[in-house]
Length: 282
Image (cartoon, rainbow, N blue to C red; front, side, top):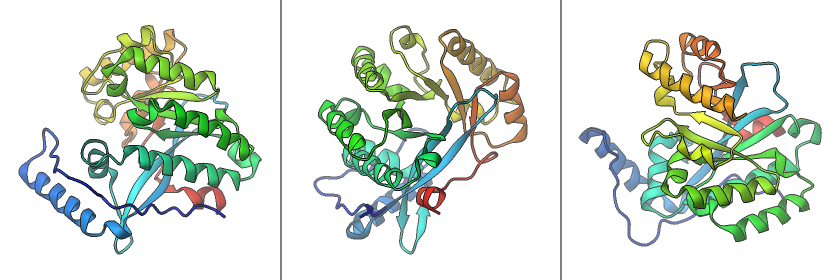
């Protein structure tokens, strides 16, 4: 029986309100309102899985890169953006591991019901928290679950925030190496963001670099952003790492990324997110 795309879980224990740097007071107030609403409806909170494909900008792709996105479905059936949900999960409510497990298990169940011919076209990218990255017992369990469903590790790519790697590069390098030995792929997410540095690539081996959307949205007009993205692309090429530009929303941005020989582009200009089950089970 397929796992329902619904996660019911109370927010227990102490809680705190988090206002991210750079936000105004009105934005902070909106966040507080959303948190209070989430707490009041905790018995019925639901998370839906969506998918957004990264489009290849060259003809050499072997599998299509398909990111799995999580959305909170509020009442009545209103999709709430993840922009306010993620900080709550990762900073204030210790739900990251539990939600990671639910996302992974739900995707496994769905793929086990998808024809091999359909699923083998894709590499499914799933964001994971630092807690999940370093939970070696979970990875051993996941290996058994994948085999039980007649799936293969190369279907999966784990997206890890650049800030997680920079917090402890050696620990991250060991964990990522363990994943790749098992046959998984790894993406560094939000590359060139707030904690911009590429030194870790000297000893952390990854498959993709996903460029932060803050660098992408104005790349056609901002020479500074364009220069940084160009440097990231040159470093990636020298290390045989593929690049993904996130947050592509305009034609000029798309054309600029093509000129810079970025490997993949992802964003609303190219594809809209779609419910995961509808895309693969129709």
